[in-house]
Length: 194
Image 1 (cartoon, one colour):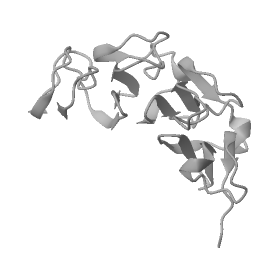
Image 2 (cartoon, rainbow, N blue to C red; image 1 turned 30 degrees about the vertical axis):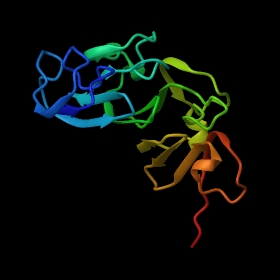
Image 3 (cartoon, rainbow, N blue to C red; image 1 turned 90 degrees about the vertical axis):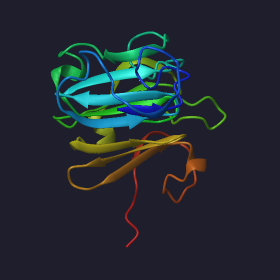
């Protein structure tokens, strides 16, 4: 069920109409148990049976489909071989980027890098480049630990490991939790302050 502003197709009803009341999504895409739905500024993702479905605005490649064309209805990201052949555990949407955690603990990013105006976080690849397809963030940035959760903000991202360590990266103006006050281009562990 979706409702609200549909101007970029983010409601998934194969149109750009607004919906004032909850409206059932139709079609083959979301048959099965949707274990997660996340909404960005103008795009939406859903995890169904370990697969990632996306729709809405794709101006920065935040749908991970290899192009910048919007999708008005749920569209599968890749095939079962996407995300290194692993199933999707969870996902989150920033304004113009998406993070995906797989069942084997890998973290993937696609969409906008940082545009110098503090919009969206650095992709975690030591650059500000946009990614049109899911790109794995190397495990070395997390001490080779398994990732279990990730969150995408407006200008930053965060991930936690199986051991409970918190890593953040992106625009420091978003408050990354590091004492040095600097923007981070790669995931950087937040030191516990106990």
